[in-house]
Structure formats: C-alpha cells, structure tokens
Length: 110
Image (cartoon, rainbow, N blue to C red; front, side):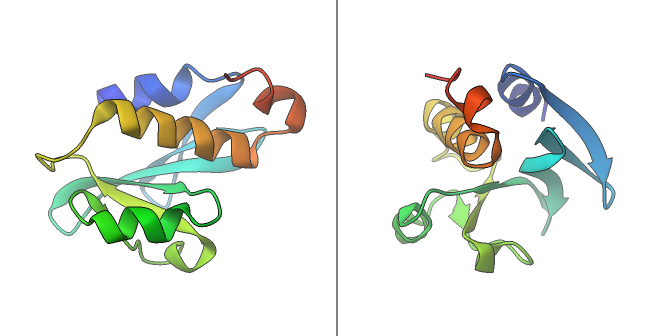
C-alpha cells in the first residue's frame, strides 16, 4: 500500500482519507482511488476511462470487477498479483485522477 500511496499523493492536491475502514485517495472531495483488503488480498479500485474497464477485465490477471463501484465503470486491481505492472497501474491511477479532478488540476498531469 505504501507504493500505491506514493503514486496517489504525488498528484496535485491529492490527499488520503479513511472511509468505510479503507484508504481513499481524493482530489477536492472526489474519490479517485479506493484501497483496501478484500478477499484475502490487498486490492485497489479506480475509475476507468470509458471502454477501458471492459478491456482491462478481458486481460484478467490482476484486474477484476469490484463490488459496489464496478457498475459505475471502476476496475479493481489485485496488488499482490504476479502479473501486476506498476507502470501501468501508475497510468491507471493518473487517468482515474484526471476523470474526477477539476479540469484545471487534470490539465497539470501529463
């Protein structure tokens, strides 16, 4: 979770807040990443760009359909998966941030 925390908090005005007993990462009150311990493994859920959720779920591996937020276009990632690519996860975290951040802040992220 330390590595995920660094990815999230490096984004403009991002902060961590515990909600529902889990770490949530937010920008201006809006959640862009939910970290937690589900189903016996450390997981994270993040908002996916339109069409991206289906593509990631088709890959399987570390990706899964998360409870509660999956129907809203979010995707889950098992952080303990051997197939996890941290570079790709960083890109997904950044994209999730861009999707929920105000346009001015989203534009600051390359």
